Length: 362
Image (tube, rainbow, N blue to C red):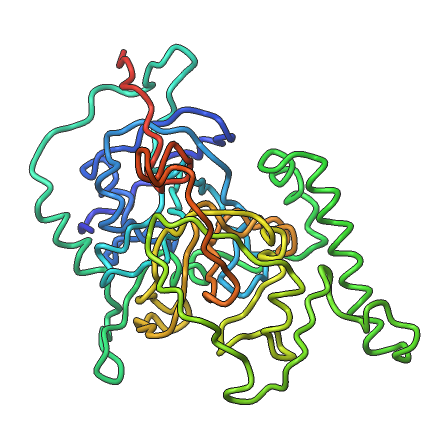
């Protein structure tokens, strides 16, 4: 962001649960290059609202994925509790991705609530804010007449490297993020699914488990052709409404043999939510494509539910917590016990960041 060499503070080695302060833009700016990035990861306009505020580390983001489920290594990054992108700097994208925070953008706060550094510098950061806005589009910012956005999700391949299952140091971070029991369970599932892939190539059909399909064994029955999957009754669900996610068998009946319904994939991570109730977070109409950076306009029913995110049971423990997208045919409206009370009630998962009290600066 300036002509001076980038500043690279020493890594903090933060752990889940630690308390941090997000540094001011004037403190963060020296770490950024001409494209407002550090090690390939952009600092985005949507992150400015959190500068100077205090949060807890939710999970380390050393392991991540680029949307295809393949794990990648991203050093010195964390996710902070409850902080997601609101899309305001990227055409109103509704993906609500978890934000990546390089440790160079954070200050650790000790057990007594004191910062290790002095009072943040003051000054005019308006020019810096303009540069952040300019960096939200790629240098060739239009393609086919459409804006070509640049965000943390689109830049993951540039900010990370492939991570192989045999790189054992990753599992130390996984245990800190998720706990030993989950790590062992996920590794067991991964080993089983590797065997399933091998069995499809090497074994006759009669000897395969569930035909060689991947656990949790989602198998749509409908042919793969346009118009083969049903749309169901139009519910016109709105944010705040309460719904029940249908059973796995009910949803499977609406899928083609690639587990899609009208182009929308039903992922294995979604199966664990079947039978549960949740509130509608949003009707999704706009998403930035992680691969191309182009805005996808969605005219069909696409629903996001509060707190219903990828738990990484089948995606190698990636902590991105990506929201799942649901067809209305996979959901059913249920009566709301709070309808005559206080609206949405006291449910959790309202998407607001959990900021902690102001800290004492030494």
